[in-house]
Length: 477
Image (cartoon, rainbow, N blue to C red; front, side, top):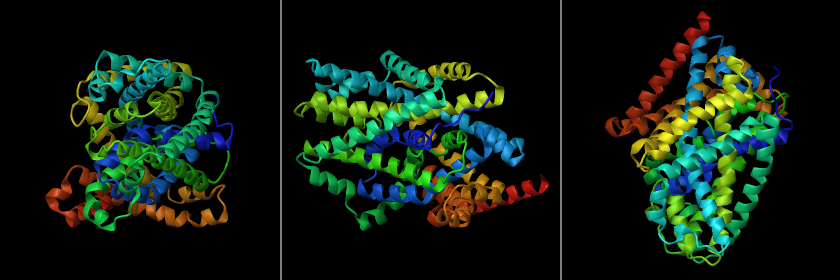
């Protein structure tokens, strides 16, 4: 059975950007930014996107285009090692964990979008009266389960249609719509009272604040960067495996990273002016997953034409969520198609059935912030899995592929981009894995116990052990 490919270069870029531009930018980004100091977090986040995210994105592209298979087959075939193939299963598990909570949040958004749209017909949206109470009732239980199933069904329909007729066609519509609507909302939000204070909170460069809080926001910023760029779950390996021609991966990766970052920044330019216009402190607005729903629902209820603005906003979020969720579902689907020869239709049915169960657990679980199944999966589990997943890809590219990675990086690239291949490989193989190991250690609080420099030393030593082990494995193959 012939493997599917993208019909156009623009289709690949928009699909990959759509995977990156999802709830991570619009739902997760504002509340993580607010919880971690506003502009201080934004600066650290942008730095990680540039210095870690883009090289990591190119690493996944190189593996995917070179391997022409899902993460399992690509890692196994490129290394000649079954152990790496087994590690590829890690990305399938990560993708299922991601979509298990993602489809629940997507269900919340569908519910709010529908409630807002009913407001256009004259019925005041129910969440206007008591945003916190409404979200508490909508976030968990049988209603949440029903909307989770609806969102998952929409996702499955797109993936079921295939790479060209489903994923590519869908994202070609969704991505331009997301950008146009967000730009319009950001321009309008800038006219609201309090917009200047919001911009200061969100955009003002404050070096003292960054220095004082750098290590506190480092791990959340790294997790957010990986989440929004769809790194560490095998998404970009899978999407790059459908490329059937040589073209500049550095160019494509840069465009995707810029689009992703633009949407995240635009989301903040919508959310924060709305909250400040009502005198609401973003850091005190239902911190955690409910920030988008409780804080903004209260803002919409006090705005002229609030139902119209709410419908437009939640419409944007629905499109962004779908463009990202289809990429998550595609990972286990491609695994079943590549490794077991299943038809796409049967693979979609099997994976969707599994996520009905795993996502159902997240939907019914009553705790949504900090503890409980949903809070654990959406927070520390996802951050840890993505960081570990990207670390492994970078180590694989630098120490297993080596010269093959450089050749793939240069294939189709212009002279300027090709000249960056060797520095990129050095960063990918050494500096970035150690940095990501350090962020993993800080996530688990090791720095609080050992101190900063001992934690750095532990990360360096762990990296050195991994590098020596891989060199030994390569010599035995």
